[in-house]
Amino acid sequence: MEYMSVRDAARKWNVSARLIQRYCAEGRIKGARKSGTVWEIPSDAAKPKDPRKKEEAVETIYRNPSFPNLMPLMNTAFLPGHCLEFIHGMKNGPRKDIAFAEYHYFSGHPKEASQEAEGYLTCRDAEVRLSACLIYAYSNLSLGNIQRARYALKEIKNTLKADTERSSHARSIEGFISAAAAALLHLPLPEELPDAKEFMPSLPLGLRAFALYVQAHYLYLQKKYEHSIGIIESALTMCAEQYPIPAIYLHLAAVMDHMSLKQADRAEEHLLAAWRLARPDDLIEGFGEHHGLLGGIMHKGRIFLNRKLFLVSKYYIA
Image 1 (cartoon, rainbow, N blue to C red):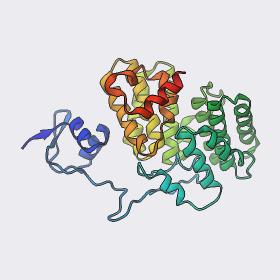
Image 2 (tube, helix red, strand yellow):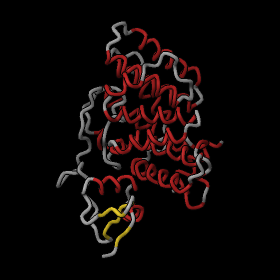
Image 3 (tube, helix red, strand yellow):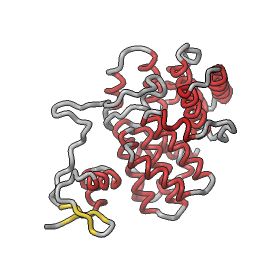
Image 4 (cartoon, rainbow, N blue to C red):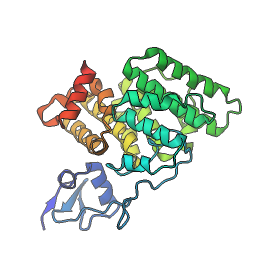
């Protein structure tokens, strides 16, 4: 019998090598065997079925978040290519509007994201209000509207400060929002940021995965590349890849780490994994945000993924 490597199987089935390794470890690839530290996969093996797919229909979300209105799209495990399908299927209301604002931001349409978030900057629901403020700050920073971005950050600070009960729920929200704002807006982490061990376990998996990206990014900035990679590897192993938006950011952080360690092949693997998740729904914003940190990997001839990503990278260079 002929065998192929994990990387060969990943290319053949258009998934990440990490996912192939997980399939092997879980016994989901018939005939796969381990030789030393590497997996060997029968060349005629069938690609395992995605557990998120029903027999006849696509299951676009399979977990109900415990923080239903806090960055709902980021916190959703949807199948790549079905992002808008999921949003359109949501009940009309603030949660759906915030999800649309998230989609427009992460797909590179900050003007639309800003307009959709603006109406919820003073919403009575704290989760909706904080989500709106975060998106409004992101999008207006991209648009060059610094005063509007500062206004949103001030609203975030006021909202968090107004919670006098300091419940564990509130501390989890505070930890996530503060860290997310710091990472994506390139601000220093707040001195009074809650301990990650305190708020991370309370977060649902999608938000927890993004919080781990924030932690990995922070370690990258401290040049602790191996530690950062360790966090990313653990997050991706523990189901983070099922949440496309956090997974894209985790893979891009891994590219930064591996390029800093001059491990171009590993960096390329993570870049292509991020692109496989992003391309079906046009979730290209993360590539632009990280462009200057990717060590020039997108400028190698074999890494120009398509014209749209090339134009995004040019936009951020300018």
